[in-house]
Length: 444
Image (cartoon, rainbow, N blue to C red; front, side, top):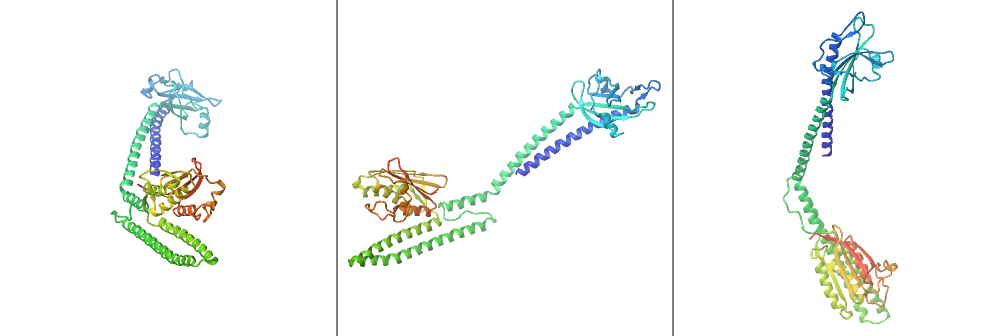
């Protein structure tokens, strides 16, 4: 479209230039006829060598300052032009000529010279000069004719305005036609794009609209790709489940046997087996989250999950009198499975309840077009800045006297990363720790 508009502008400029040149040629033609008449019918007195113009050259030249002028002059020895005879329309004025007019005639003998100058009333003139020899006169004579070019300039301006208006209308029509063509002609592509976005955001499972013949193969391939991705995810989930079953059973047997046979060896085996179970749970959880994040998007209400977690944790930490103040828009949705959001938010909120004194604040809100931010704060002792990185490591525990395995924030960190999100630890205005998690957001 930009090239089309540029081409229209160029065409308009070229047309205006051509119209101006044609108008100037028309004026020059009239001036040529006037100078030719002066040359043809002017006479010279053989005794005085005085030049006489013909009695009638142009009726318009008989009125003072009429805009039609002529003059007969001769070159002087200093390269200037001295008037000999002039039209009545010049009255008490003479035609202004270029200072190098005599030199230009000397450089190009026999050729006429056209130029622009100013008239008696300072009006713009188009002039033509021609140098000839008259019988009975030993020196050349310069014949000058001029015409007011104000009407010419007015016509050119009118043509430019009319052309500009016409091309503006044409450009507006062209732009409107292109917009309509794009909106109407490419509407199926826009629909396809919106439907693919709905699939990606978990609002639809496949493409169901009817598309033109040209787009049917593309829609079918996209549906096949979605089905293939779902199949891959299901295989991954099945594999993860099988692996969990295969590992958890031997570990459970080891823990049972160690518990039934007390002793130093049993204690070591039990402790290591428990560590193995925690690590297996951690990595299986991470693998399941990664599989879900790569597969078909699902929508989970954030408010429902926070409400469920708040009620559960307030009952668990009833002895501490923990109050959980949570807030989330009902239209806010997590782009992922409910179980994963329960684990992410649950780990952060449980950690806050464990270390907080009595108050926990939870906020969930949109963060950009496709993200949401979950913030969990407590009024506990907080966490030094230098220790915040360490607690994200698997099994890291800064206080061994507190219950737990040290995997809470690590699990949260890994799950957030599996969904392409991020975890940030900071100081809370409540006095304790603030945990901020960024996660993908689904459209309401």
